[in-house]
Length: 228
Image (cartoon, rainbow, N blue to C red; front, side, top):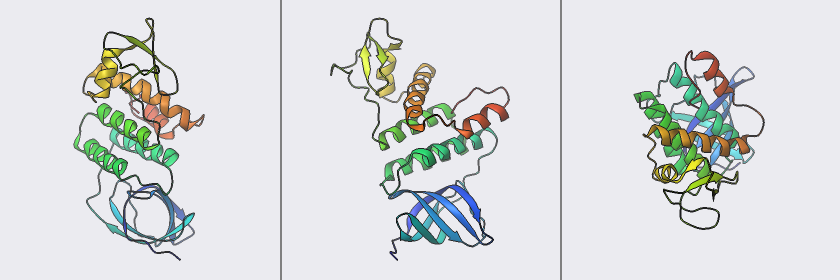
């Protein structure tokens, strides 16, 4: 068996296994997503930073030890569903055994922002953007499909391949696209545009299976639109 140095990790999903174990889906900083068997029925928490000691084959890891690496992030109510949305996106899309250190840091910062009460829309949209970039499908807001720089006065269409096509009757304003390029997600119109574009881009990779977290948010948070 191959033993590796401890790695920073969060638990994306935990499933009881037999009478004395867990099957864990981990988001690790330098190895992406890993599925691991953890023997022991000690409590295992979501949104808790860990140092995980892993051993085994690439497709079947044993988690030898989980050491708490920081305070658990306590998320309740609406914020709990939004954090679940992050976990579901990572579980569905994050590759296995691929360095994801930058996205890991963004994930941690997003959870801390949700706990602190930071406005959720900018947090979620920024995470979605970084996730698309991690997957190699980031949207280029610098130029259109013809290689021309985006212009504030021009209108554009989104072509479904993460590119923009200049069109006088396009539904996208160049001014807002440039603001999104600079992450001005505190502006409501920019955050709404980001939600539209990133949801469209993510949906292509998620396929037809709907997100459970999104349905839970819609049905269990009265009077709220879908932020995720």
